[in-house]
Image 1 (cartoon, rainbow, N blue to C red):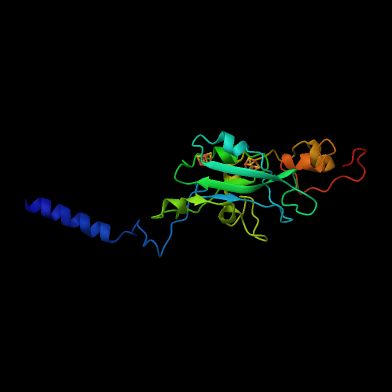
Image 2: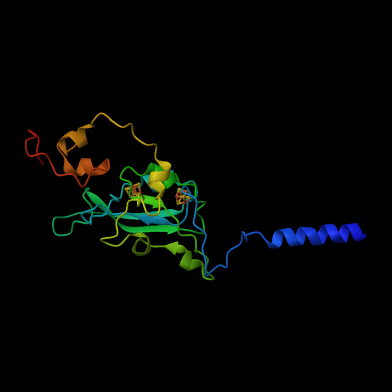
Length: 201
Ligand code: SF4
Ligand code: SF4
């Protein structure tokens, strides 16, 4: 009996000298692993236009039916994205989402990524349907999931290209089949159309 008490006390004394593994949440936060999947972020190009072209591929890939989109045509008076369309409504239902990342993988323009935000609890279920206004990054804060300060999810998940990759058509010409909108559809919407190209918009 005395032996067991001594063993127990010695264990306590040993642990007292160790650094705690817990943090005082919510005052302190742990840094998340590079591939952590938290709340979605909708991204912009460097020129401020939205990357989302309202193609519905993310909604189609979602196994939980958690994404609701209403797309609208861009016009010269109101250009929101470089593509033909933009997402006028973009909702993600966090009550259904299982954070699988399929939407991020399906998106051809890199418009949606799952980043590090994890404080999603709410007492009201309606608060857990995130609307475009909450998901879209602010103008001037574009990082496309690759902010080196936070190791964004695109950097962490996408395979790294070879050091000297062959140029693709949009990268060579700034256009794709002569259409800037088509270049936007493959994630090259911030490129300037090549003036020497025989095919112009
Ligand atoms: S992370 Fe998965 S479940 Fe959540 S919205 Fe994207 S595809 Fe749907
Ligand atoms: S797949 Fe990407 S571009 Fe298409 S609707 Fe979803 S977020 Fe927008």
